[in-house]
Length: 242
Image (cartoon, rainbow, N blue to C red; front, side):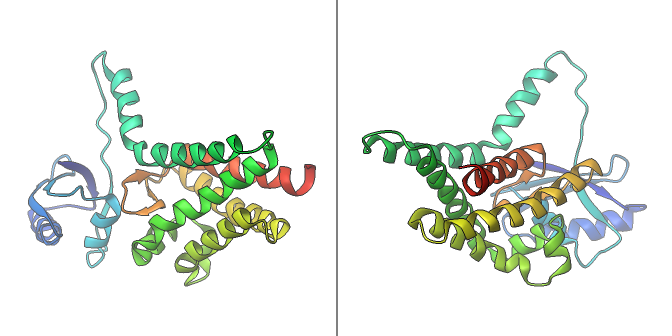
């Protein structure tokens, strides 16, 4: 069961409208909306992401969906937060571990460790791996991405183009072709996205992160910033310092 917050509800009519809309989502078994707490509980076969919920309410602009923040009052809150972090970011952690292992495996076949080549393979894996998940649903990714990326907000169609840019950068890094251009574009593209993420987080807007496409319910957080900054630093090292 997933629990979210619905802002903008003022009466039972609002509850009925929202319930009807959300109940139409594929796989949803039951919907319970509480007017007093502004909480919605969704029981479904597959988890309903925040993005899916927001898209379901697109025809009802009066209402907005967000993550539901329920304060923990017992002594187990710290443990629960840690468990929640691991569970929330498990898909991203697994992808990173796979990319890391593949990059290290190549170095085993070499006479000596090459830090430059290792970074290139990490960056290639990052772009190719994450672009794959975005291609699974370009429209949903574009919608989520345009909520925080400044370029996607301004240029229509950039959100749908972004996975192709990631794929192209990944292929450039893995092939060794146009490395200077690949590093420059990495700095440019990820810097813009990172600024948008920081602005969204500091404004305390709870938005779904689209780094793994729209198929995973990952909240936009400082984890996204750290991920992007690491890539930017590797690109700067390869372009200017090496």
